[in-house]
Each structure stands twice: as structure tokens, then as C-alpha cells.
Length: 102
Image 1: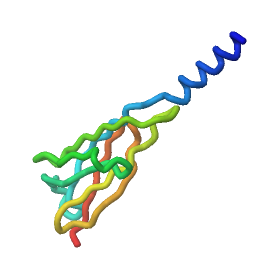
Image 2 (image 1 turned 45 degrees about the horizontal axis):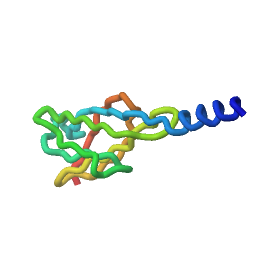
Image 3 (image 1 turned 135 degrees about the vertical axis):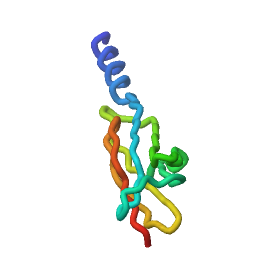
Image 4 (image 1 turned 120 degrees about the vertical axis):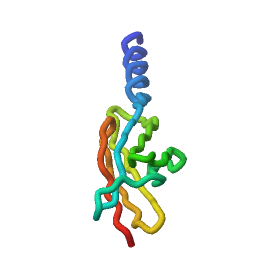
């Protein structure tokens, strides 16, 4: 009976693991390479987790995700007069998002 209890407790902890997803990056104009300020960047699966790029085009997002490993975060960047871009950034990673004018 003790063995079963220990196994069940262990499985409970393993299945309830949470990870903190942190991603960062820079948003630039694809044609000029100039950083874009004021771009809205958000987590596709949790659209309330959002940020706005600063004067250097930099952003950071963090969110809690369940599971054994931290999955990549699907990030969406939107800005007036530009096409919306969706990319996956590995947890703990950073990337450059290149926006194209429409």
C-alpha cells in the first residue's frame, strides 16, 4: 500500500509541473532593418500576455505553461501598416521578428 501511495504522489508531481516561459526579441522593418517602436507582441495562446516594443524594438514576454518541458511560445507581432507575423520562439530564447509593410 505504501508503494502505491508513493507512486501516485510522484505521478501527481510529475503531471503538475509548470514551467516559466520567457522569450525576448527585437522587431524590425524587414526591408530597412530599422527597429520598430510601439509594436504589439503577444502570446498566441494567452493573448493577455503582451508587450509593446521599446525605442530599440525590444520586447520580453513571460508566461506559465504546464508540462514536463517548456514548450516554445507562439508569438504574434502586429503593427499598423504592416502584415501580422506569427513565429515560435523556444522557451528562454530570443529572436528577431521582421515585419513587412502591406
